Image (cartoon, rainbow, N blue to C red; front, side, top):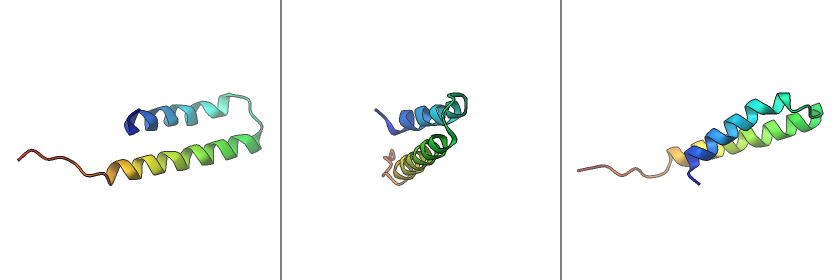
Length: 54
């Protein structure tokens, strides 16, 4: 799965967490872990080498 797709899926997941009816402690932990995953994926995506046409 591409990193871009994972970032989109995690973004949707984070948007859905408030309506799932989970206890606040679970929500906070899930949002924190998910947000860190998005940050990691975005960082590794931006730091990967890009091919240029010459």
